[in-house]
Length: 202
Image (cartoon, helix red, strand yellow):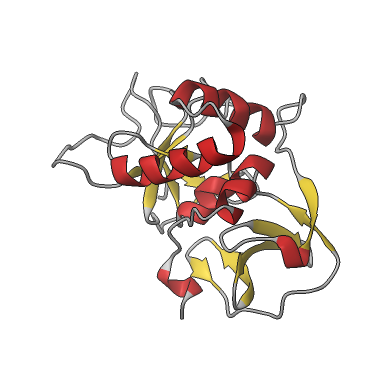
């Protein structure tokens, strides 16, 4: 039985057997039986980690340990509001931090996390979304189009599925509802590229 630990671009956390390319951390979200409660975060430091690092091993959803969340790829993690981990993804973090600093100034992890927490959540704790012109969106951003999440690439819009992306469709004109927090879209436009699942290149 799949565990409920797979994060989707619209912020939902579902049960699905495909693990994805990356893991994330928002604190302890599960109980001693390994079941998610109502909370979807315990702190503002939402990070995107490697699924393997220095041979470390940990049981999934162990009592009293942080909840391991999984993402199809880094674009999905960014849509959900996560940024690269400064430990297991040091080089990626430094590239991301440099692009952030070029746009927003203060670029220590705590400052970035505070800014992202405001940008990814509404006061009612729902995902914050914004509108943008389709032609301005960088590769790696996520939008809602035809009532479902789509990944933006140079090839078009790829419909998202938990196990991978569908074939690209031509990018539409006009305004689109964007899932990826606005600061992360800006960092992508400034040159940072999230790692995409191979199905986005198929």
